[in-house]
Length: 392
Ligand code: TGC
Image (cartoon, rainbow, N blue to C red; front, top):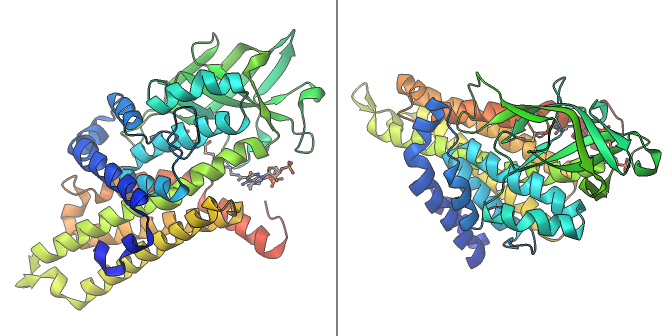
């Protein structure tokens, strides 16, 4: 399948090497256990260190133990990890694109030295506490506050759907500050970021039970009750909502690639079953209706990867805009979900079992569709771009 479009011809030797390393990790470490972990709802903590040893954590960042790889290399790693399971690509995104990016973009030199090398190595885990229980689409409406208290801050509030919070060593907590001299940049909304060690009294993370999606990863409710941190906890470079949005740009970019990995796995399963399942005395793949479905699925995978590559090249030139990222996130996840559903149909009854990865990918992609901006949010970002009118 890879050879039909020869995407490899568009990649450098270094990019292909990153891709191969991630594909090997996915096939040798993740795939043998992922069905078991998904069923058990188990996050395999020991893989965090292995991901660090492989150089995947914060791999697109420069210095502080990070690999300093290009945006396309990072995207290819996301694609290969998500071809195994969205939960593991999500972990790499939360750690590298959200928590580490926040510190790398906005942190003081001391904060970077304190946290980034350990996070890149997989010795420390970070989480990104933005979304709140009433919903994630409107971070401007957050109710978590940071109150000035002497020469420090006291944080109160609640966050929800926070990946890895119960395992994390540090949380990047976004809160509204009450001190005008610390506000800025977003029309008085006064959102600032704080680095909160999760051992701080008043910080509690509780895994959310009952998930039917991304079961091999952990998302939590976080309570912040009188969490006292020093002045050195505030991220000096993030003033206003552009702070967290700058990190969401990074994570959304990884999803553009990652969702195509899940789509590719579903297509591969559908092709494989089309060849070896016989109905009416011949392989189902010998039927025109099945071939038409496979061809359409293949087109969307290849177009999606070409789009991801285009966005990656723009990102490497420093020219990628938030609206372009919305194009990629919306398209990749929407098409990946459609491909997963079509693959499930081609697999017939077997498609609903865990003998094939398709239902797991379809279930995972429902989360991917919802986080980092829902389909509808990205449609509205694009609508605003096209019309100049804000429909939020
Ligand atoms: P708006 O007035 O448009 O902008 C406010 C300020 O932010 C700036 N800005 C951006 N900066 C960088 N990148 C972007 N993509 C940006 N978008 C906006 C903007 O320039 C402005 O800056 P300034 O300095 O001029 O004040 O803000 P708005 O409130 O109208 O935004 C509307 C909207 C809907 C686009 C925005 O709220 C949005 O993107 N909503 C979706 C949020 C989202 O994706 N939430 C899900 C987060 S996922 C998560 O938290 C879980 S992490 C994963 C895990 O833990 O597992």
